[in-house]
Length: 75
Image (cartoon, rainbow, N blue to C red; front, side, top):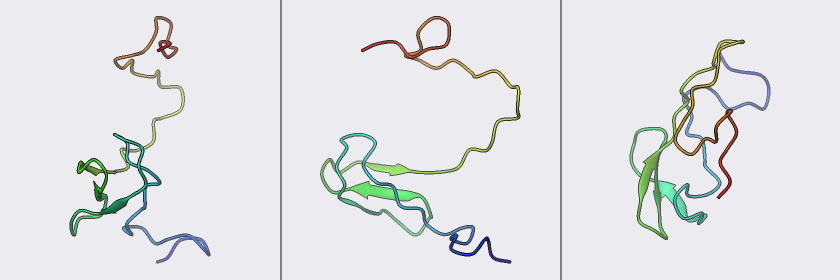
């Protein structure tokens, strides 16, 4: 079964726009697994994956760098 017209089928490799480490756009697939990428500029490899959808009304889990009260700490 395919998705809506124009949408890519589930399981296809999604292309990131830039490296999450250095910001460069020279990205190439890093292996046969969907979501594995390698940056040609900084030589780092990373994976993209969909973690899921949070249920409505669920509180956000704080992460490092969050400011008190849930905002992002200024840098």
